[in-house]
Each structure stands twice: as structure tokens, then as C-alpha cells.
Length: 231
Image (cartoon, rainbow, N blue to C red; front, side, top):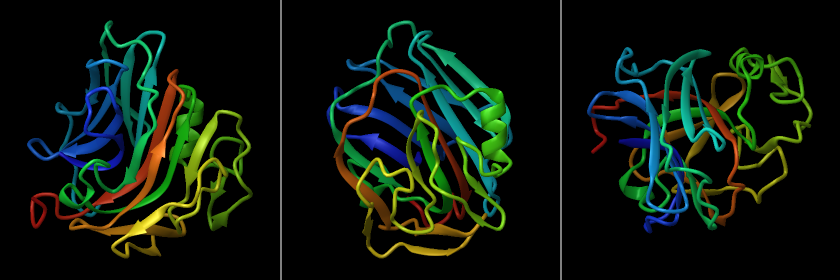
């Protein structure tokens, strides 16, 4: 697959989440890892393939009480999968990457543009997911809107938010991202967007820890050339 976000290391006990496009089916896929070797995946294999050159809003959630992973695309439910062996997600510090898999970023990069990646320590409800998809209204869990960004998000459940107009974390949780191999920021979905070449460009942070309970991951992404130059 082609990851567009990962909190991932090489050890089976050191992996948290991988959000990607499965190249065998050109389908969205969200994979969560527990503190052992179990995983749970939500994917859209029965849905239409991901189209090159189209903006999508992808939301993946994990419910630590029910051990359930869910996937939503453009405010539409796609898939939900439960693995009763899961329990808490991995809590070891590990590298984070946007635009690649963190343990092998220069071999797994995606040719795409990305905008407004946010992470929450809860499962967002339908209204919150809808507000994110509709670009928000300056509210507490989105706080970006046309034609410009508002103030920093204020939700206590917002763990990290990168507008991807630059390397900054607008939520203030993390240090600024490291820009590897000169990824660019150009006109995007709403403001500037991260632009990746699918060869060796990605953004990263080293060895970040994360809560293990309920979580949501959300981003706008516009894939390009999924079956072309990318290996």
C-alpha cells in the first residue's frame, strides 16, 4: 500500500496506525495495532476505487472499548471491523510520518497533496465528522474555514492538528514537523496544501507517544498517479 500517515516502527510491538491506499485494489485502508501482535483494519474494498486527482476527506476511528476500527470517506460510512483481541493500542514512543510509512519513508512515499490532518483522543461523532468534512465554521473541533484559518483549535480532545500549509502543529501539542527532501506547500483544498512527489518527500517527527484509548484521525488528501511511477 501507499501510506499517507503512519505512527509506525519495525517492531511488531512498536506500531500504532497506518492510513494508506491499498494499491492492489486502489482502496482506502486504516490499520490499527495493539500492544501485542493483533491488528484491526477498516477498508473500502467494496467501494469505488480511489481516483487520481480527486480530493477526499478520510476519517479513521478506533474504539478501544469495542475494539472496533471504522472508516469514513467524504462524510460517508465505508466499513467497520472488530477484533476482540485488540484492547488498548500501542503506547510506545515511535516515529510519525505524513506522506509515507515511518519505518521506511523513502521507499513508501505517496504522490499526493494533503490538507488539514487532525488527531483526536476520542471517536468523533457524526456531527463532528460532518463539520470537518464541510470545512468547519470556526468551531471547537475543526476551526478552519473559507477563506482562511481561524484561531487554534480549542477542543480538549484535539491532540494534534497540522493544517499542512507549513510544518507547524496548530494545536501546539508537538514540535514542528521535519520537512524531508523539500516537500512543498502550494495552493490546495482550502489554503495551502502539502505537496508530495511520491519518491522521497515526507514530513516526520521522531519517537512520539500517544494515548491508547479511543482515537480519530482525519485528513483531506488528493492522490495522484497511484499506479504510475510509484513502486
